[in-house]
Image (tube, rainbow, N blue to C red; front, side):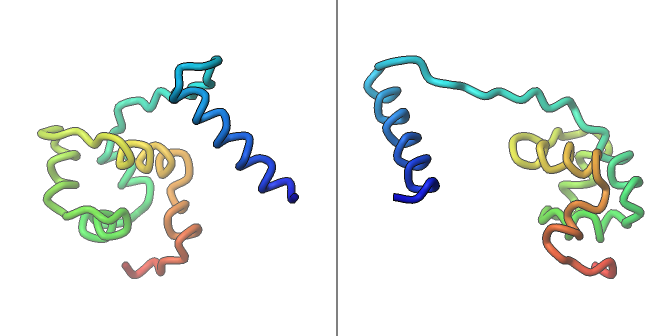
Length: 100
């Protein structure tokens, strides 16, 4: 079999063992700090509407995050952390145009 198949098979066997309560399981936790959404957006050079569209949220959601009435959670928080480190990551990875 291929290396990919072997790796997937090992992972599935580990998952099944973990589900049965057998053996140790590796748990990976990443601490994602509270994002400063306004500063992150400013780093991209995009308007609120452009930035909201580029990350797939409504402009109202973005405004609530920027004004700290609400907090991004889960995948949105991770995405914002990635954008904070690399302001062009979304455009580069997804191939979006700068005229969003």
